[in-house]
Amino acid sequence: MYDKTVIKNYARLVLKFGVNLQKGQGLEIACSTENASVAEIFVKEAYELGAKIVSMRWTNQRIQAINYEKGELSELTNIPKWFIDSKNFLLKENYCYIAIDDDDPFAFNSVSAEKLSKIATARSKALKNFSNSVMNNGIRWCVVSLPSKNWAKKVFPNTKNPKKLLFNEIAKCTYLLEKDPIKKWEEHVRTLNEHATALNHYNFEYLHFKNGLGTNLKVGLANEHVWLSAKEKSVDGIEFIANMPTEEVFTAPHKLKTNGVVKSAMPLSFNGQIIEDFTLTFKDGKIVKATAKRGDGILKGLLSIDKGCKYIGEVALIGKNSPIAKSGILFYNTLFDENASCHLAIGKAYPTTVKNGEKLSVKELKELGANDSVEHVDFMIGTPDLDVIGITHDGKEIPVFVSGDWVI
Ligand code: ZN
Ligand code: ZN
Image: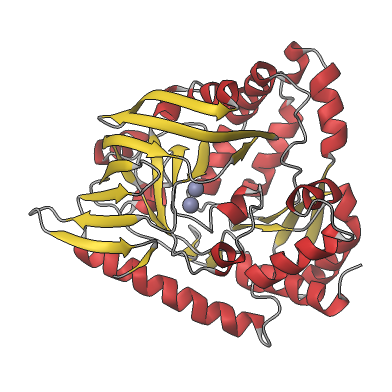
């Protein structure tokens, strides 16, 4: 149903520029059964590029929803050892990993918030070793998107061909419709890198976020924090891009130095349910009050998964002129919505966002102020009128964002 050349370009872009697949390397692709025909093209291209083996991890949210609804909680939270081993195998065998995300943001609406939150907690805890390694760049990974029927219908209701419309938007935001997508990505990476370099130069102690929605939040940054953008390096020194699209420049906040109030700027899809119109109040880094007009139970469940879920682990800046922001579309999908708007993340900080972080122990990371948790959930706070002021260690105030866009 999609243009074959565009899909082929997509596969090449993700394999070469995303995970940067090396000759003789293994690859795993996670994809839903609905998009099997596209996955087939990814697999073929991977072998063309010299993959040793390509393994598939098939998903099907509709079946998963039945399981969540009908299954006993004791069974759903009993994560089998073979499943955990199969994830750790990827680390051991130095695979790279592509996740093709086509999740329906409302897939698990029929499951109770409490049950969902218990399943999510059990899964996150069981896969802690794998997710730690992912966040530490111990594996080269890339998350990309394809439409699914249910997701597309949510983004483009009452239209004739929502899947095609959504694919077109995904292609635009991922620069797939450019004459030479790889060249365009190289330019894009360079621009983001310039912003990161400027922020690293100032080495701010705080960022102060303010907008008309009612956000008035001072985010302290971790000691020895590093601003990163699109391109990262895996522990074996090979470059990769973990998210496509990506528009963000991000770092680690200091766990104990955030104060004030933040209002969500967009709905957050978490575990197949929606949290909307929420307010978080911070005192010395801790979320001391949280209310949501919709999905309040889901939000409270998320904040109580573990102790680290009461603190933030990421602050990310995205200008309002990114193609995703300019599309004006609410995607109900974190990969897209987080790249349309400045965001924070509840939970773990990427160790790579502090100097030499991938070599530091949990204790050393904690001493620098980097938060630890089994979760990492982005939520959007950027609006077109958002101002961000950087405050240096000697108290100088430098505008970073004026009316939602970069001035640094
Ligand atoms: Zn981010
Ligand atoms: Zn994040």
